[in-house]
Length: 108
Image (cartoon, rainbow, N blue to C red; front, side, top):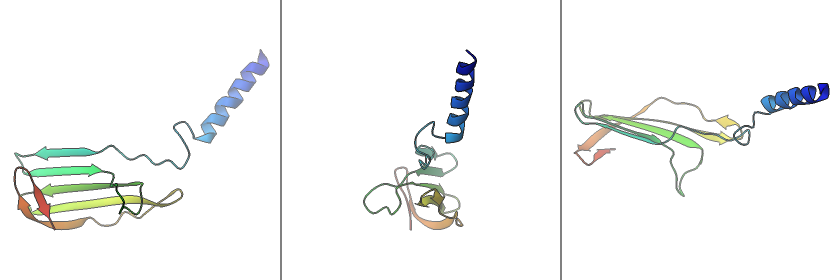
């Protein structure tokens, strides 16, 4: 019985050190996609992962927030650039809004 307890303790310690509960050590999981529209204050926001053939790094996340009264959209992002390596968080990019309607916000 003593060896079972020792073996169980050793297995638990090995699992804790392995850090592979949910997958490989290099798996990156960002928050899920989100869209928010707050029409009474004139704000929209969207965040999620960019996908498609032209995306350089598949592990990425982007956040875009637009404010009608300011006439601007703010964009920030981060991406994996190598094994266990994330790119640098840069300053927020600011884009002027050229169109704002109930169905569409355009910023260039």
